[in-house]
Structure formats: C-alpha cells, structure tokens
Length: 84
Image 1 (cartoon, one colour):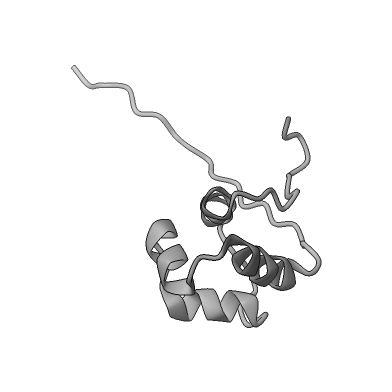
Image 2 (spheres, one colour; image 1 turned 30 degrees about the vertical axis):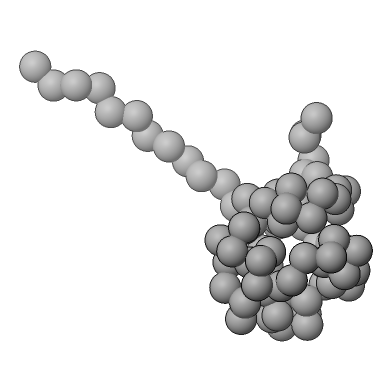
C-alpha cells in the first residue's frame, strides 16, 4: 500500500514598500539597540542589515520583516492583498 502524497504550490508575492530602508534605519535609532544586537535577535548578518538600510537589497522576506518589526517594536504597515 502506498501513502498519499500532497502536492504544494508556493506562490511568490511581492509588493513595493516605499522608503523601507529609511523606516528601518529610523526604527533602529529609536530603539536604542545596536545594529549587532538587532541582527543577533533577528538572525541576520550585519552585512545584510547594512545592505537593507542603504537600499542595496531588492527584496526582504516577509518573515524577516516581521522579525524586525517584533525586535524593533514597530509596525511598518506592510500587508499583502487578502491579509486580514
């Protein structure tokens, strides 16, 4: 007897968020955390962080953005169509 196998489709959705690098930088400054501490909390490298705030990254994973929001105690207002 064979087990059933699920087939999964993962859809990639992207939206543009204006001024996110500036928002990230400002949120860190208001938090009084160091970039190193933030990166450790979120699980990203300092190089990636600096690329984000300098506008050198084209995209950020939603999961990473949510971790940054939690660590910085901020909501950047990013939502996808259909989110509640």
